[in-house]
Image (cartoon, rainbow, N blue to C red; front, side, top):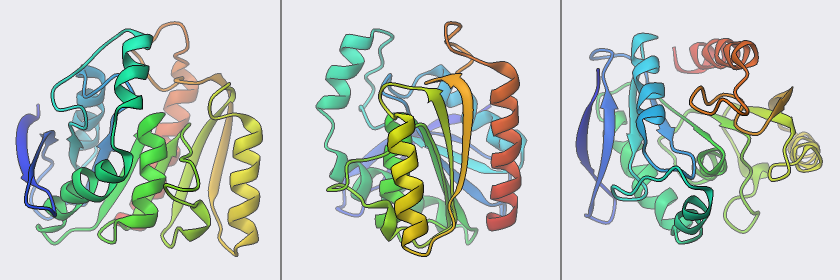
Length: 221
């Protein structure tokens, strides 16, 4: 449904990505990859957003590299320049989408969920953010500095983005006077990914999708 494109970064460089178009004037969403890379599953999420009426752009943060092996995925994620990905690749995607005049949201999974929060803090073109089981280190982005509507979806069986970390996130944001829309699921990390039969939970993934759609409709139109 979508296509591979390139867009400009603020520093004058170029970034590739997968773009699925819903139509001119429609609101837009940046879809940020998991640590596996810009694979078919993430492109499928962008296509799903387009079918729901959103122009969707998934930036290719690994520059064409994709893996299905956890060790290699960890290596790729560990080698990623997170500030550069936030301020250049993700912001470039936001600027590209915002050029149409529509509001832009950002969402992502795992590593992409952490970068979603970073974008919510650092990317001024973004109007709403939805993170799936991802929280960045405070030195990259402190969630208390989010000034836009934020929704989070987290798994109770998660040894990376742990329930304790989610509790701390919610407490800190509420303590700063913010109103995060936090949802917890009795599922494992990655429960939204239909390509991962070991953790995918169809009913909870659908529930999360419906909640996200309602949230984005309220804040992006």
